[in-house]
Length: 530
Image 1: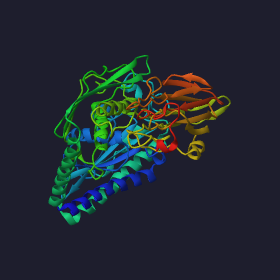
Image 2: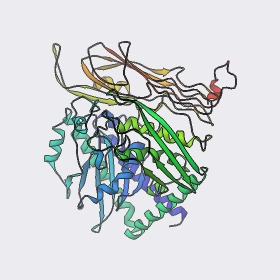
Image 3: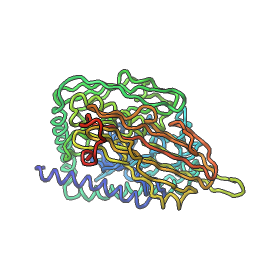
Image 4: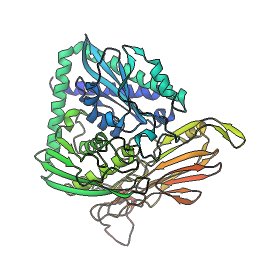
């Protein structure tokens, strides 16, 4: 293919992923997938190497890119099959993220796979929202190793019913799984249409050329980083079980367009749920370096080839089964990004921003069903993440009240929240002044306040409540976040029972500032901020 044909080929693959996402969103039942867009879609070649992905959730996509080759090798694939998996130690991230994979066969030959990963608010954990303060993987819900959900085009109804029978919101779960299968069918159809005029040989050759092109762009971008060794240590606040100040150490070695990332010195895996498999750590690392590459770099395996990854087995970012991982995918991945960026800031400070709010600020809540006072209350599960302040950089101030880095979800519209659950949103506002001061000011965090209209169980998995988001080049840190119930401070990670009328307030951290203020007696103006 010439340059123009290769660009069109890449764009058509991306469009297939985009269409898969559109089908999944519109067919899903749960607000978590339909409204918050907590899902991702991608295409892989016959060996399980990433070919294309939509601009969905970085932690989903990077972890799939790292682990898919191992998954596809385990299965005896036949036309019409679909495999379901969520086991974090066999290619997943954490249990609520369920992946459905389908092979593409053309004239009897497997040419690749389509896959989507979606977050299910109920995956069978005892606590509503399936994001518990856990100490083992089994406490976090139903564990699914790679298993055929569809066999030669026939749904394994017994398996599907076994899965949805172990969750409280069975009808919603059944609908979401159907949406995931529908998205894969749409992707297979569009891929077949793309291949038909090209032929199998040209399609496979196109993938090889695409990866080679991405690798050249990646090497060129990484070669712009001064050669050297760079190290940085950042910390998680705690694991929810009284183990605090958990170090994530990153050691970067940059040589001639190649980067080695070593996590030697990172804390050992912990009894709480902030552990993560190496695939999640890889997703965070890939994300940071992908941000340094040109925008036209194809989102495929070639762009990751110049990056190697090492982490001691049994450490926080390469945990052994059965370590709990519910918060590792969301919170630890966010801190890995901060640590990698902290190391890179020593080499290219003009291209790296200060730390952002550094947490997905996870809120899981619901009710197991039964009598609540005088009334019968049906079971419900809800999960959301809350944005915060973005770190400022050399080119401008941080954005206010946004999701950053490893997540890319929307908030749940209050109309959707209040029409589906016994909750009222009392306040949703910027946390003015929470961004760190500097020549460029960090973005402000958010305030999200809920009133409960019925008793419920609530789990918070939040970070940057102790260790503030750091500033760069003399900029000040952002304010740490804080959680409150009826005005009383709560720990960053906690499960609580709430009563009718209780008020939960989540105030997220601001982003770090960048550069020293020009006039120490004056707050940075909005003009200087942006």
